[in-house]
Image (tube, rainbow, N blue to C red):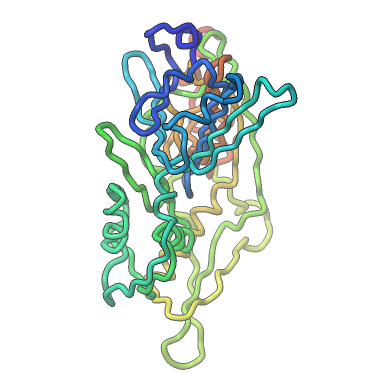
Length: 378
């Protein structure tokens, strides 16, 4: 929280977060809120951890007796930038931890929260879906009771096995991980929530400000470290079990995403034989399904470069979210486009900071000298 909030001011400041529990702002305990940490990724569930420092009131701990603080209470976290309030996280309190401390007069209460996926992981369902029904239509039916709408770049999702004997959460997870698809939730205005399911959106334009590294007063990125993992295949071979006979059908696919820079990160110029791994054949897998899975795997392993670092969220002035494109400047050949893989957002009295992981498929960026953030003063 900001200093203004701690002093009781009604002013909202950039990078401040608003916490609501059970639909009501938890403002009475803002002075006790030490840290709010939200962890996001593009493949799976989001989590939030809120840590409060509390003082003992006689024999009681005030937050323990607050009716809002209970497991499975709905929680929302909203981030303020300028005059706008941006929905950021919503879900449920999954666990409440109390540490009374050594002195017995001060302690901490920690709320561990999970997004809406938590509600989808409470009941195992036995459902035999209609044979031949498209997987996207099934997903829409599964998520509808949770108030979610499906956002996807896929035109169809063929399914061989239409029997569900797991929770709705694990059913969606199984469909996504089998095909290396992204599957994350996003909160929108007016209480709308979306399930993003499908291929990485690498063709999208960067919709957030540029990450600026060592750019004087324009710097918003405090650290930026890059690793280049060459031990990932350049191509993927996939196969399907034969409907008759014993010969397995095999095909090879390579990444079809556009490069994020001027030079591919593959090893085609190494002088070695082709770097190709194969996926095992699967029973009841159609050629269409196998091709989709092979293509998704080839695209995923093309992300051979990974950048980690820390962002000053207040200086950045926007939310850096997984599943989006971002531009980086001030790092030399690592400038240009990157894809956001994971982010951890921390709000505390010192400010708002984001630890991030970015990925890309090019070993050299596409930023020209004229585009460089320092070009005007060099």
